[in-house]
Amino acid sequence: MKATGIVRRIDELGRVVIPKEIRRTMRIKEGEELEIFTTDDGELILKKYSSIGVLSELAKEYCKLLYSSTGNSVLMTDNDCVIEGAGKLANFYSGKKITNSFFKSLNERKLVIFGENELSSFTSSTPITPVTMAVVPIIKGGDIFGSIVMITDKSRFSESEISLLKAASDFIACSL
Image (cartoon, rainbow, N blue to C red):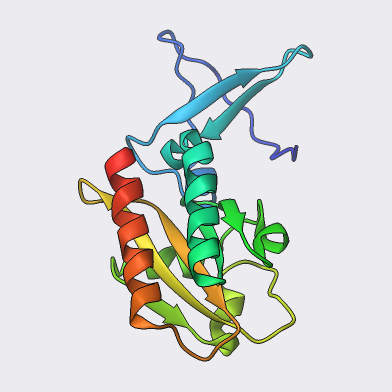
């Protein structure tokens, strides 16, 4: 845990204001849900709620299914980090925080394909082998909840791989 040096008072209604800079850095928007945790040491922890994280078992099984069908690594992200995956690169990316530029690419609300020179925009860690990555955002009710990512060592994806990726995004969105 990292100290920010910011101290806030609780108002008469029990509210505390999260400073704008922290909200911007953590990509917390107005109306977004936060989970509240407590520790035995008396700490209070706020964590962004991930509706996709709640589906982690389903997400894991879907990633395994896509991997077994295509042979390509498959990852599922929420709007902050990689939450599940299957394939050769799943362990490499598991739990890694996605970058702001990758998050912005989700706002295009369509399939985006990254070549090997653009992969540094996904997470702060990039694999050593050259790869191509296809990303489809998971959208429900106009809101972006995360993405499905497929990674291959080939220069391009087949139409069937792209179709499977889009179907996975639609299925997960219906499950939210």
